[in-house]
Image: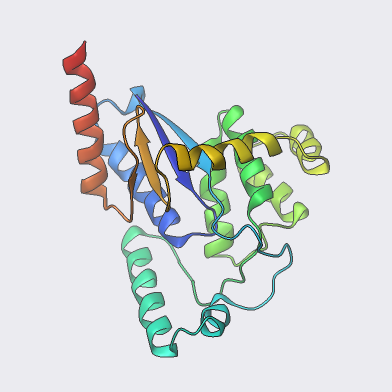
Length: 214
């Protein structure tokens, strides 16, 4: 079974979705026959490459009342704690995620997609690093076990730009309008902050449907 997950590194719900997806696979008896493929989706294509204001400030500038922002971020932090991750939404400084998506594509080609996704998520949401900075990306790639040569070559040029753009364009074709979104064996996209039980149910239903057709 091939499962495509459209997500953005800067999305806290995607980080939660990644952890919940991993937990669902641990409980799925046919996990060794599931191929997980990460697909690119940019929430803010115009985000800067340099860290600026915090997300708290940014949401305030967009007119959200401070108490509403506090409530939203408090819920996100609490869900992160439940999932065993440190989410710090009020402190992150949004940056462009395009090069991170290019790097994740390379990692997937090298069989390290999940490790790279985990490292990028933690770097941005927990360590508050600038995941648009090439030096930071190179260090994170090393942490995920990627060879230095291909990473340096990728970051020095525009490799995988077309692939990222194609994934973003395909998102609309398959019905992905929000992230995280899960597409199991070409079925209609399922989007939202699904919990582990819901993701496991998706896996089970898709597996049983596929088995019934054999």
